[in-house]
Picture 1 (cartoon, rainbow, N blue to C red):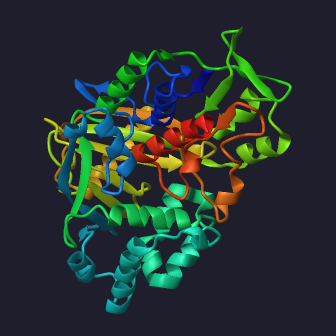
Picture 2: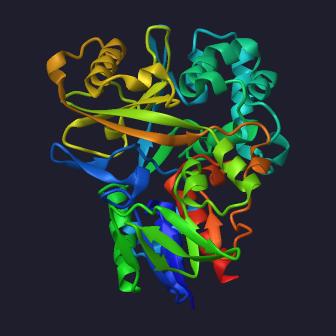
Length: 427
């Protein structure tokens, strides 16, 4: 059995560590943050234990369900009927079911039928490889037409991907449509899942399982260098000291990898460095009143510079109403330099545009979370842009959320990839 270091204590790193321990390896997990969980980590939001970034569960998330069963916390998984809305040019519309689509006043009947058929067809497609090299906006427009694209997709792309909006993989967009489209109670009713107590319930159980198997978790311990000799892992350097290991698994964002592992072949370094990421500034509010009845509200309005609101309390119940306002943008975007207070004030003004009945005193608390690597930009042909997880250096395995492709970020995908990484070493 080997002595192994895992870098990054998000769900992927935790799942990898857990599975390596189960087959008898000696494993230590290193995390730069002061807590485990990565983007699923919780914080104390004025007395509420909640995720820094919103998460939801869909019915295709089988890898998560398997882990919940294994950890005997499957009873924490709850399902709730949820609603989707669309705020377009100052008006709030129902969305997310065939009747809402037919009632939407901004499109003609043919455009609506094409849009509905595209969404339905996407849930039936299983082979995504033919979509990998297609550009998403062109693919969507071939199905639903330019007018429907301009009304329903264009501004969402612009506000989430900016200069990359016309260079996205159709396979990645397809997977998002399919995952949400399959999470339904019926044709008319969406149904989403959550963990009672939040993602923290899963994180705590994974931590307990790792410790019970003899694993060690080191917080506030960023790895400075992965050490290689004669094309083989020898260990890591941390706090200026070298630690010996037979293998290393890195699950941190790929842009950090070339500096941390200088012995990598140049072509691997170039591929890791070429992966673009969107950052996120996520404003979270507690309110004394709901904004809408919707869990997810897409927004396309020239006066509102966000693609949507996530009213989380319309999924998981709280005493107050919880709303996430995500600003996705590259770290180079000028708006990224705004202060937290500026983001809070702007986001609050947008929420009041959606629901003008809300007063300033309805906003009870606010918090801002920032992360520079929230969403990889998956361009056409993205599958070939990713080097193999198992690198040419013996004992070195590297992946991050980019490797979920074509799937979107989710806790279930983190579990899947972390476990697959561990299996690669076992074989």
